[in-house]
Amino acid sequence: MAVGEIDVDALLARLTSRQLTEWMAFYRLEPFGERRADLRMAILAALIANVNRDPKKHREPFTVDDFMPKFEPIAEPQQSQSWQQQKAMLQSLFKPKS
Image (cartoon, rainbow, N blue to C red; front, top):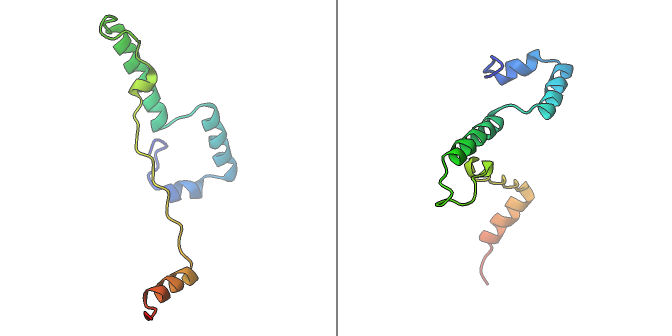
């Protein structure tokens, strides 16, 4: 959206391989996006908090990490079962009891 295109497929259709590679290289040098915005805001929040901190009540200065959002980790996708595994599971469910 920051590049003026909301249709990712259309954007990828227009970009050449070289352009995409250049953007990837630029990102490694100068990261951009939401994580970078969060970092900038955390730096600012730590600065403001430390300027206004009462050293008697809060002896240690605030750190940038104190203000970085912490999101729950994304769950690992479950591996798909092969049809053979599914068949074996169903057979074990319907196996006659002896």
